[in-house]
Image (tube, rainbow, N blue to C red; front, side, top):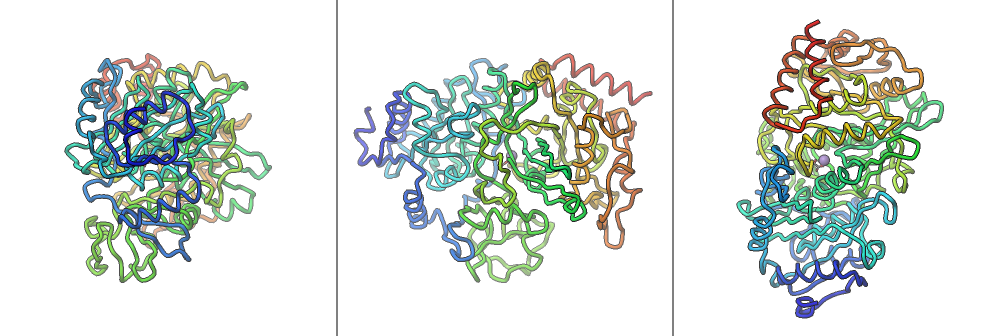
Length: 616
Ligand code: OXD
Ligand code: MN
């Protein structure tokens, strides 16, 4: 213990005698030179103290405690509202290990750069030490981390998003391993903002940001980037997937995992409320997770999945009691809102889409009075809430949280779904022919970009398995890992692709989405039965017969006065071979120019088959 003895005060020592933990905390303090070091236990009193402190420093605004008990609002700097993919690095000794679509930096250089930036930056401040677990503490799935940070906002978010406390230190024990996470706000200077991952050292460093995805180091940094690397080496998978459970009319329960890019409706699908017709039949959805799945092969040869998180870091705009009743209900207690608007009439929160009426007295997400008369849906700069504003809500708040949420063994997967935002080409749903073909379908995913990452919105980009920003190693090796896993799963889930976002020539969404997606899930489940329902075999895989998607009680208008009909369903189920021939060329181009190497032969074979099928 060197520096820790010099700090003005140290609260708690986490009761750990793990030399590596103490050394990491000591070195972090030596570098950043905080006045105080506080170990986080996650206990109620400590959290309450931190909330008070956050309100004093202005990091938090206390909301109406009658309407929103234990809820707070936080505003980030205006230059710091999304993940910064261009400043996110994988720092491996060999550049090739990070692969061509990750930013790479030599680890020695990256450490030096970040240390230089963070040196002395916590002077006069407090460094918090957060022992946390991804997954249920003590389970086979669980992995542990220690994050140090100078942000109360980060501490409080981590206490919602992960399992925090002394039991984590106990589980790490005297010898155990953990992921080191160092976060310092520094000056929130976007030019010196870096999110660095050192998979070979189990280390993450994040400087100059205060936005969730860049600083809640248990989430994207650990549970996806570092964990995907660990998963490859240890024979399991860390994926950007929701997990949901479906109770069927006969009482059986099935579980599905689904990978969609950021802000493409994972939270909505994970908490879906089936249409009334389905509820009457006995269908029910339960949410295991809305963003990340860790998946292992069980003794029974099936894939078993857990959600390693403990909360939802959901996109606020568009969330309302119709689009996602359960997500909204989850935000009513113990939630931290980030960059939403403050309704000063009753000290509650508001965002675009929460209510149809615009509240007259709001402070916008930048902290300025908002003029609703100037609001123009198409101009994001007139919005009261930032388009990537978020809620951090405890998972247990969700009215449909799965009873399996805390299961140590996870849930067995019947199906895996891939999907993205595609205005054309990709049908509503199709099924891959087998595991390897499913891997090909995932590898070929592309989607229009959203506000979850900094940069242009609405641009079509490849996002294999929704992991483009999150695979902690070479994407070609990542594909190979999927192929290799397939060989270990004697009873694999079936793999599907969905597209809720087809538009007509006027840009109207052709499929209602939200609860009506249950109609597609039903077909998927029927394809997973021992005797699957029949389907049409097409150039790209199996597509439903239009009659097999149940449209009962569906009252969707594609445009005012234009009701959705079976003909529309046929349109969005159709496979246009000419378009798919072009898509195949595009995939080939992506493989060759972006991924460049290490693409498994099995995927090239699937591409050849696709090309051939489009010609026949
Ligand atoms: C998220 C994201 O926050 O994908 O989940 O950006
Ligand atoms: Mn995500």
